[in-house]
Length: 126
Image (tube, rainbow, N blue to C red; front, side, top):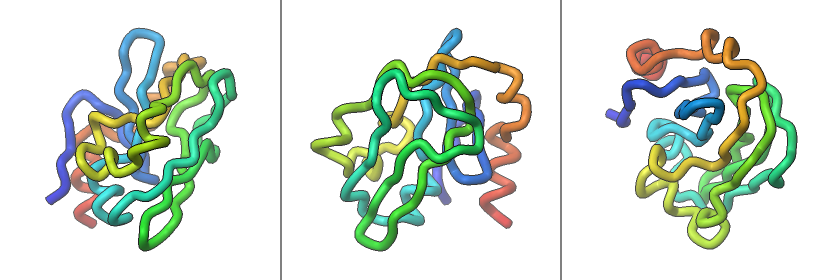
């Protein structure tokens, strides 16, 4: 069973958001990295890029497949996890610790449409 962490928000496209103040750390879930297999490349957006909820902001490539990254929130990218450029496999080691982008949230009410840990676990078990 894939790991799911309480107090995070989850999307149906298997991204998570960890909220700290006005910022959200966005990454892919443990379930997603298990499905992808060994991650070999992460396509990161640029700092100051605008992301929109439900829109693509990058991609993750594994030995099996490439998967678009869909932002669960809207806002401005204030930081990218540059460690992933040299070591994309960090996502396989701990998907939740290795977020992909940090976003200045423009509309916190968007979080209301995401799943909590219990709902996401149920979603993954379908």
